[in-house]
Image 1 (cartoon, rainbow, N blue to C red):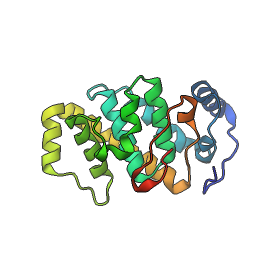
Image 2 (image 1 turned 135 degrees about the vertical axis):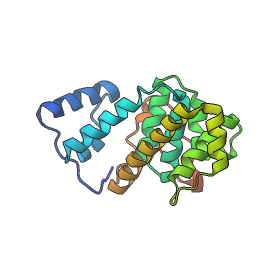
Image 3 (image 1 turned 90 degrees about the vertical axis):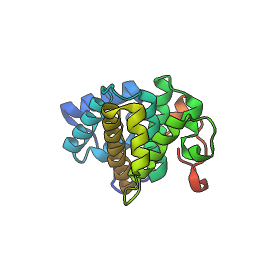
Image 4 (image 1 turned 30 degrees about the vertical axis):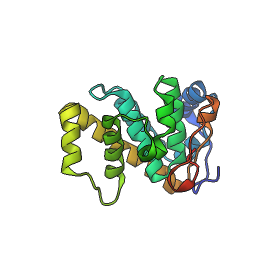
Length: 193
């Protein structure tokens, strides 16, 4: 991977914890952490918020995961899509659906609710945001207000991380390969992980 900001050495007590956690989770320390280590406070805040949102429980985990993957595919963040494939595998989510996120519009594996969630994720990720009243109303009716607020926040966080990774040139590090989850081609024919 050639990033726009070169990785730096991860040092100090907090750095040792980050390396230990990463090695336990991935079997190694991802290069992307070295890029983010230029600002440990930013890395810590991002990781902390990511851990907190994983504890939210109003919205179904698979819907949140698929929404994050839809954002990653839409924005073109190969790192996030690769990581989310890895997490889907480890969380026991439907891997066939996970694989088909990049081409969800042409796939017949998604339920109407899942399709609305994927559309919502893309609509929130476009500039300007294109969420329609009708789509929002359908999701509100099916999910309820607490779950829709949670889903919206997860998608907002996904936009923060995916756009930052793409801007810094952080790309896939092969997490999905370790669980033999082969991604499909993304929209416009490019590989996403």
